[in-house]
Amino acid sequence: MELHFGGIIGLIVLLGIGFAMSSDHKRIPWRIVIGGVALQFLLVVLFLKVPATTVVFEKIAAVATRILQFSNAGAEYIFGQELFTNKAVGFVFAIHVLPTIIFFASFMSILYHIGLMQRVVGAMSWVMNRTMGVSGAESLAMAANVFVGQTEAPLVVRPYVSSMTRSELMTLMTGGFATIAGGVFAAYVSMLGGDDAQSKIEFARHLLMASVMSAPAAFVMAKLMIPETEVSKTSGKINQKFERTTINVLDAATTGASDGLRLAANVGAMLLALIALVSGVDYVLGWIGESSMIHPMLAKCGIESLSLQSILGLLFSPLAWAMGVESGDIRAVGSLLGQKICLTEFIAYDSLSKNLHSLEPMQHRSGIIATYALCGFANFGSIAIQLGGIGGIAPDRRKDLAKLGFRAMIGGAMASFMTATIAGIVL
Image (cartoon, one colour):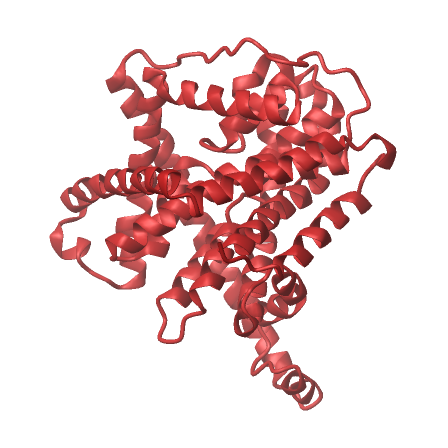
């Protein structure tokens, strides 16, 4: 098994940052930290290097990709074959990506209605509870985060949120920032895979792995930064109470579709606004960069024109290097990391997709590492989303949530970067 030990530097750096940001170095639960890192390595080896489990996971990814293709039938019926087959970027996004979000949200709603997802979430919760010794509420919410969004996952532990310790709240929020939801998973597979079915299966496999692996990584970062100093009321296992909110399968399908429509509309509106704003910022930066004083300095740094992407690429290049990215792709991946945190992971995945399908794409290994690193909701806008979502469940904890928001976002981002680093070591 070939290993790339360059990523060890990145792992040490990320754990070091988490340790430096700790609120109580003496209380750090090293069992959780060591167990979480070990579990990540075990998962990535099982998923990438052990033939039996690799085949199983590829089959799961193939099934997920096949299910996503079913959305094409609905999209083609609504928009017509002429628009559906148009390959212009705007048409592909509006007619392929956004409808995929709606369909997958409906499909996930059905899986929750019949009780299948509850069993999967419960099994994952049990594994994390046993291997790392975390509380029942924490492990259950973290497992749910792998499949649903950062505001939906806390609903599975709604009765316990108000009584959670500060460390448990940190874990709850960090898990939301470190993972993605099923609806956007479908969109990212469509964006990164393009028209190639095999490529879609590959990216589906890596995105599934990234979200699963980031769960223990989120525990590691959360417990490094805010160690437990109180007594949890849910130590050990808790009774899993998943409230069924739909009457039957048809109701679940239509409710999920409505939720997916809202998500797709939010994604479209967000991208429209952010891309327009970035264009405006780039115009101003480009004008500044053309000045006689600035241009020579940019040339020395290897920057042809000043833009938000070039600035972010420069700032995050050291982190990309530490994560084990190929030397020729460091600045490109650094820019993606910056876009993820400062804008959204959707913008970053869009940029990655354009790079991978360009005439001069980054190396395959760098693209896969970037896929793992971007897999999570950690950005400034998501802080407000979590404050509103979790704060609505437990209004009495709003002050604690506000105090933890920025730190949890950083922890979630570092959890995703840690997942990418460990995957890069084994790739």
